[in-house]
Image (tube, rainbow, N blue to C red; front, side):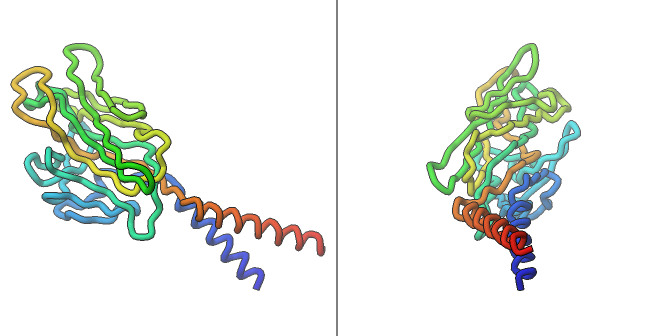
Length: 234
């Protein structure tokens, strides 16, 4: 009986540890033509339109089959939500592609909006803007606390890819994350094409709630106590 209980405890603890590992979701994980799909433990939806992948500059991202194929336009939404009974999460990084600053494709200084819904606390909205640079390296402004890195230049035919590490700081109770585009300002050129982009990658980590952490600690304590008793009897 003790062996059975010990096995159950170890299985539970191992499961909790695995559940807390970092999960990577790539644009390639999505299936074109669907508008709802479970990927990496999250429920993904697109509205209006369906998931549609697009590759440029060696990076594949997912967008929506709407105004701009394979990209997320203004009034289009790509959303990920925890499953029923799922854990809130912490975002390690998110990577967005095809976020240009113009004059390529007649683009404006494209703007991505990222909204997070928390288990406790207010819903928060952040923006990533590719700012027009007439010379020098590419630059983008993120309204959150994270660090922005350019992975692919904002020039034709490259991918204009941006990675944001720890985009929401220490917030670890996210239950939903949503991507859409906002109107951008003209940097240079005709600027006849408004903001659109796609999601290249999301890295996140499920975070056990305090009650779960307490149960985990209790389980570890019980295992340690049982081991001490067994040792003393021997």
